[in-house]
Length: 287
Length: 333
Image (cartoon, rainbow over all chains, first blue to last red):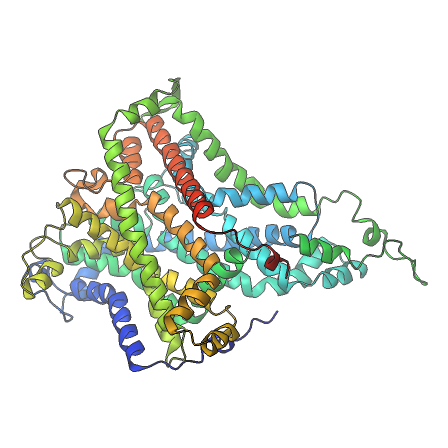
C-alpha cells in the first residue's frame, strides 16, 4: 500500500519567521523540563535549593547517577523494565497481528459482535479491573513478579484494531484467494502472505507498545513493590516519596528512567512520529 | 466493514464454472460455507488473554463492589449489598475527589487541546527541519508520568522552586504550589498539558493533511480569510480527530493517578495535606491499597465508569441539541 507522501498533503504555505519563533518557543517548553532534569541531576541538593536556581550542568552527575543506580536499585529496575516492555511489545504484536488478520479478512460467526465487544472495552478505564486483577495475582502469588505486569498488558484492543485497519488495506483479498487456490494452508498463508504485508504496521505497533509498557504506571505500582521486582516507574515512585531524600539523586533517577526512551525516540523518531499520526488516523479516526 | 464484505464476495461467481484441468482443491470453493476453525485459532490467544485479563476483571469488579473484601484477607468476601456505594455517597472525601477530578480534568484538557490545535496549525506549513519539530513535540509523551512529575514537583517547590523564582524576578510574590488549592491543581494539570499537547498536535496534523488542499484554494478564491478557512475548512475536516482526542483525554482525565500521587511526594495517596488535589484514581488507591478496603475501591471504580458514561451522554445530548445532523451520504465513498 502507498500512503501519499506527506508533502502532497502539506500546505503550500511557506513558514514565516513568526511560525519559526512560535515553534521554537513550543520546542523550548517541550524540552526544558528534560534539560533541566539533567542540570538538576548534575548538582547537589544544596545548590538546587539556592537562588537563583542553576541553569548549567554541574559536576555531580556521575555521583548522583551512581547513588540512584545502586541505592535505589535503578539498574535492576531498568533491566526489569526492558524485559517487561520487550515482552509486552513482542506479545502484543504477535497476538494483535493474528487477531487483526482474522477480523480483517476472514469470515466467521459472531465476528461483528466480538469486534464490538473488543472496541467497547477500549473506552473503559483500566481502574475498573484492578481489584479482581489484584486478587487474582495475589492468589497466584504473583505480587512482585514481572509476569503480573506482562500478562495483562498483552491484551491490546487498540493493537487488534490497528492491525485490522492496516491489513484491510494492505492485504488484497485476491492475494489470499490466490494463495488458497495454490493450496496454501492457513499457516503458510500467514507466513508468506500476511506477515510480509503486516510488517510495517507491526514495527509501528511494536514501538508504540514498547513506549506504553515502559511508561505504564498505575498497574505496576499496585502489583510491584519497591523492594520486590520494581520497574523503573515503581522505583521512581519510591525515590519521589523520599526514600532517598537527596533531590539531585531523585533527578538523576528521573533522568535514568527517561533517557532510554529519549534515545529510542531520537533514533527512530520519524517512525514513531509516523506511528502516532497513523495510529490515530487509521486505527481510530477513520475506522 | 460492509464495503469489504461486498468486495470479498464479489469475485466469487454465483454459479462457479469448473475450469478444465485438475480439480481445484475442495477447500477453495467450499471454505465459505463450511465451518472453519482457522479464524477461531487465530483469535484464540488474544481472546483467551482478553477474557482472563480484560473481561473477567471487568465483571468481577461489580461482584467485588458488592462485598466486603479486605486486602489483608483477599480470599474472604462478605456480601454487603450496596453498602459500599451508599458509603461513598456519604463520604466527603469522595465528593472532594470527584470535584478535583473534574476541575483538574478541565484545567488539563481544554488548554491541552487548544494548544495542540495551534501547534498543529504551525506545523502544517512548508517548514525547514519539520521532522525535528515533530520529534521534539513527542519528547514529553516519551517521558514517563513518574519522571515528569518529579521534575515538575521540584520546579513548583514552594521555597526554592524555579517557578517561584521566575515569578519573583518579574515582581510577583511566591505562590504556594503545594498547598494552595487552586495553585496545586493548576500545577498538577500543567504536567498533563505538558505531556500530551505535542501528541495531540501530531494527531491533528495528520488529520489536517487529509483535508484536500483544493478546498483551501477554493475558499481562498472566494475571498475567505485564513481564520475563516480555519473555521470552515480545517475544523470540519478535523471533526473525527477532535472527537478522538476529546474522548481519549476525557478518559485520561477521569483516570488521573500518577501525577497527583507523586506531586504530593510525602503525602502520597491523600493528594496533598488537605486532599486538595486528590483525584478519584488516587482515592481508589487510598481506599484499596492504603486503607485495605478492596470492596470500596471496586465501588469507586464503578463510579468512575458511571461518570464517563454520563459525560459522554451529555456530549451526545449537546451535539444533538446544538448541531444539525451531519450528512450521511458522504460516508459511502
